[in-house]
Image (cartoon, rainbow, N blue to C red):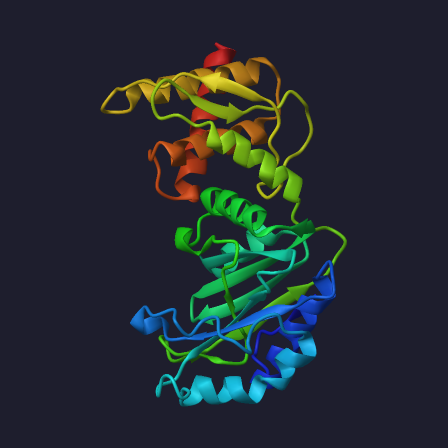
Length: 304
């Protein structure tokens, strides 16, 4: 694992980021480069002729042009432009991208998987996760939506062709450098099949009449970043305005879960996700605290 606590020169960071992308790709990768003025909300400069379907050598050959665009603009826009990169839309995708995360959130989500963390502004980051197999544009979108729903980040940055900022250039809007924080290459990657399977569960959620939650019949440890989706169980919802009936249903769920001697951590994660889905809690930390409190109360009740 390579970490940059004190940032190296922009050229070195950019080279290391590109090397990570090449090393973790499933195929001989091709890239799309993007230049654009995010402060104007104008995406007309993002994908241009001459910046699509590039080999890594062609990307490096255009660094001089990108530096100029990033500092003074180009013929179409006489102002500094942001610089982005993603896998070519004509190619299988090898990475998932999460946007607008804190550094601690990136580290927690990535776990011991192959990943890269890029600082896009003083307290915001992109997290790149290498995938277990090549994915289509649509599959990448689905996986990123599952991840965003589970862990947070920018819900508007989950498209299958979404760009990430390229390290070694400036974030024009924030007037700061885009820095490479960490790269890691190991055998473990984001499990695409589990993410796609979990989307099937999320897609069956219904605000009226009930909520479908994943429920494991197995034992053993489970981490918050396992992204698994075992068998499902139905928990009824109600229309109570104050949410007390919803909380009662979740308390009953915890009691049943404990009675069946299932993995408690899995139950807590599932209950926390439900709290987020029905907007009982707005953050994962708050939702998880609520779920743990509910399971604790259920445990006390069962011991009486």
